[in-house]
Image (cartoon, rainbow, N blue to C red):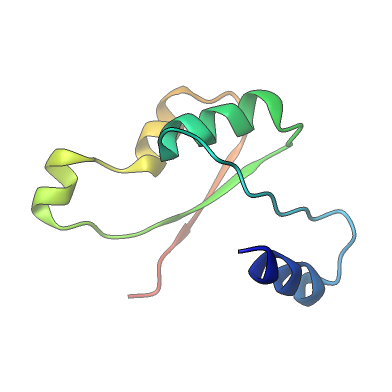
Length: 80
């Protein structure tokens, strides 16, 4: 994962973009921690289509985050 983050940083070629690896009990708790403690100005996420059962069981992290964070949220559609 560290190699991927280093590659992304080099490709962005912009010193004010940071990539962080956040470990949490769940994706949602990690994103919540990032919004509260990560000193970020904006959260960017990719919205991917889900299967019917995945939507029922897990839901959409993007929709969950949009419902309760106070930071601006930038949502990119996934290329299907």
